[in-house]
Length: 315
Length: 315
Image (tube, rainbow over all chains, first blue to last red; front, side, top):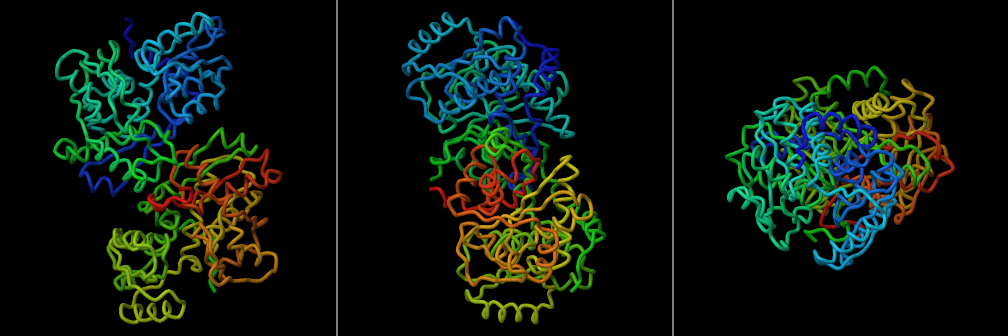
């Protein structure tokens, strides 16, 4: 298992610069007063393809040799990683195949295709996904880019926190949502080198709290099929992300579904941005744990903005 | 009638700097491909109090002498100007009274009060509004700050375009929505001095096309009570804004209600920002008039983000 280093992050930053946005950091006096903290929202919902995953996907795609790239890339993801890999492959002009359960939302399939990627459907089971994915790779020779258990992807996600600490001075804590742990791992990788004094908190839905339970137990616990409105956070930790999480995260805090939806609506209403449910988990956590965050300068990662506008969780 | 000058804009910029955001400029490859133009969205929905009107209101409030300010400020507005005046007065620590029809949305009343302002209700008629407003002024001695027909307000709004041309090089056209004409007048004031080669287009709902008809007729035409989803654009031009519009605007273009809602949803979906219907009128105009804008670098003012999230126009 190759563990990415800070040199990989520097290389990623130079490699992906032309293909990603340096996203803005927004603030809200209202939310500062409500939480008692000074919050700095890093808006990766305004990132290319609507999510921070454009960073890791671009790093993987643009790090391939021409010979490798000619075969294209492939992944299995019904979320932002599939869309973002398709985006990055499109920018390089190489094929991208995304294996998705046939039951995945049409909007997600359309998003992959919108950037030029190919969707291959499987049954909604792990065995079918693995079988179909193996076929795709055998047939195309495509390079597999895992959504988070991949050193190139983690090094790419790390560029987000590098940017953030260049944009905001004196941060004391940072809160990011945790699913598979790619963003949190990238944050650990960047901050442990650049600003080891900043405490890193991971925020998770109570209904998909496998990372929190893993953190307490000291080994990876994976749930079978958790159900949460924060659909980006259902996946479990893997070896590489577990490596970073267990060694650099201060704590993993959980919130209820109602707290997530309330925080999401607050973000839309007060900050005027479209953030997906997963992105609201950190603010929900800060609202719930005033004792930890009040009086501090806190970075908050808004991870993505890909939602179905016709099906909002409060309507 | 005092016509504001570019010196007033410079003074406004220095005066309001501490109370407003330098809002980001966002871009979208998708919308560029869709329109054939290169679009630069100036995001005043991310402005303090959620609208560009925080600029003009702050300029008026912070330009008052201490003696004047002690009596507070007052206005009649059921839209963003009332909220923004309340915001600015709150920052200066002076009273603010907003006269609003009792039929105005509760959210708008709450927004004024949320920033510390006082709401005084009138009947939903011009005569009642004028009578109630005269009482408020007689009783408090407050300074009237008109939503747009006010040199201080126009000079404040002008700072938006000053910022924009500092953020984006080589703009060839700029599109802003037009209601009373405060933003468009500020744009004219700024660009006629700093970049007279940039063409200024005003965008208006067909169902509230009084500015367009005024422009063609050569004199102000005011409609009685136009109905449009773009509720910030129902008000008519006044002498001061007409002065700028008739002398500096290249054209006023109109769009249908369906075109506005479609453009609004596109902005939310592709740019991940919450923009109010009025803010979508420029993009709707650009989509409709490809012949004018394709191939050009075009600034687009997203004027505000104050919407009722429980009542979206596409749901």
